[in-house]
Length: 372
Image 1 (cartoon, rainbow, N blue to C red):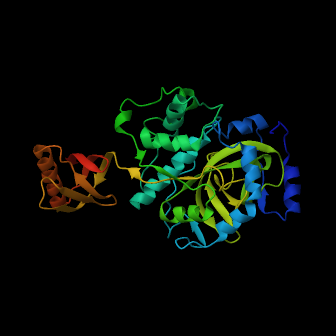
Image 2 (cartoon, helix red, strand yellow):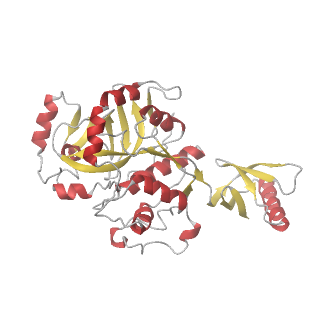
Image 3 (cartoon, helix red, strand yellow):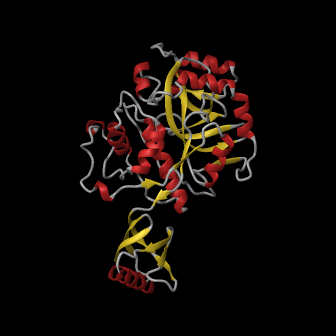
């Protein structure tokens, strides 16, 4: 059971020395906070019927050797090391954010996974994507009865991403003074990003690795101990201090030598390694608690400044497709003859003149086109 005992940097460094210094501790933006304030920066709340942090940790400890062996097993699609921040020089991970004094880590870990998935799906590391943690937490989680004091649950966050969708950051910036939903923009219904579903990878480290390589980031919950708040660099292993609670992050890579996950946190750049951290395989239930990956991003919304590279049709009524640079194929709406032929005419014109277009799509079907 967590208490309010504070741990000093000296105690952590002594414990690290006894363990041959697997990681480096120091003063961070989180280490100076009191235990209750530190717990406020976590935010995993298991619903009834789910294991608690203590139960998850006990189960993970019993399975640690098996988990580590599974993580080290080389998958067919997984190389020995992989980092989504450097895939042949390309970075598919969006910038570090800060959840501030609110137990909204579930929203941040989920959004980070979906943003990285979108960049991978489009194969565009420069894709300008910034989705709203505020919308996911202050609207969707709030509708379920959660708030900054309670935290949330990842499976519910992914489900809301699928059924309700999440707007972009500009539509609802993350501002704790507007946690009542008042920060949402007026045209939110036209700015939603949805996922087709999500895959649970809990307890399957080999599958997590293959997902990272083929699809993108994986959200993960793990148990946070007092020493973790002082992490600066290296491969984290719990060495000192009591359990503070559960926390949700995004796994963005791994390295089999010596065996660790690379993770994106939501405590700002002044904590850890510019906001990122490494954690050993099998440590603190990192691959044994609510690991999820977004299946596909549902293509609904405006696509701006796109180039038409190809057009295709077949000898069937209103069956035509357009191929866009960095986006792929999209079907042209068959709503009516007039709509179909107008859209097709606009797209043919844009392709012939090499002019960019803005288009609105619903589930990958083009509904409107504006040619520059």
